[in-house]
Image (cartoon, rainbow, N blue to C red; front, side, top):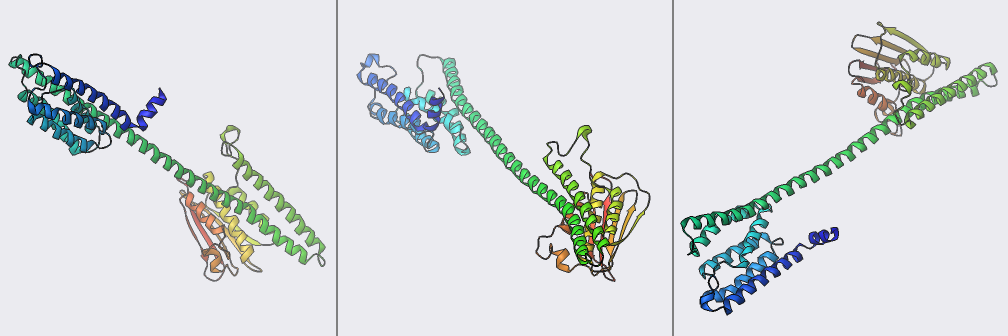
Length: 411
């Protein structure tokens, strides 16, 4: 049965041609009966000269209307109209081929050509009345004639209503399909945006975890190699710092990978996220940097109070990136200052140094190779919590980073 339905949908003209052939066969039987019946038994059949001449082309024309109704509905409507007028002019009384008028009215009403649909509705309303006036039923009284005309009009109008209902359903299904396609495209777009955001987040985390610790290890390795012969004790301390920093980097990398691999987005039992560094760990970060040989003045202003986890992580990463850049670009004998200022509605983070500062292309164009992520990731983090960031050379030399992190709506 499904194959039959598929064939009908794929070959509409062939199916319509079969119905047209069946209609032509019925019309042929009626023609033969009208031509061979004696005059006294031929009531309702074609008897006049013009009727017998017109009956064959009219039957063929109406069969063509049925056969091509879906391929060229507007043209077939005009052909059916012309055929009906010819039938009225030649006084060819209604015969089985006139069923084509119902078919073409239904077909045109089911399409989206509004003028043709309105024209078909007008024909559905007028044709029964014209037929009754042209070929009145001599055996019926006035009431019967009116009732017959109204019934025939109702049949034609119902054909138009069914076709228009089919058009409405098709339009509704088309809208549903279009909406489904649009939602699919929007879902794909959202998925791409989510993937891009996740890649940016991973890039920020990897940069913050790797760049800071590797920078400390590189500085300690260079210093240890420089004093290896003259000050073995300092070289040993440098190696210990490298070892501790490496372990810390591995721990943070393991924590990051645990978040990425977990199916629940890094959650553990109890619904808590995997611990991330916050403002309490900034003091440990400063001590680690001091141990690497950088002078850092750290102070907290205001009364500390609980902060959203996103604000705490952002503040920690800002300080971490600022101190890393100070070691990389500050030059010899550089000193740094870190200030955390608590207010009722925001946390301010200020990190500055008195070194030579970074070249402009290093903080405005993504680094010397255009691939830097430090300040880019910092701005992205601050933007995600709805804050503001200022970064650039400070007056008197050095570099300054100032971030304002709002506490409301940060999560």
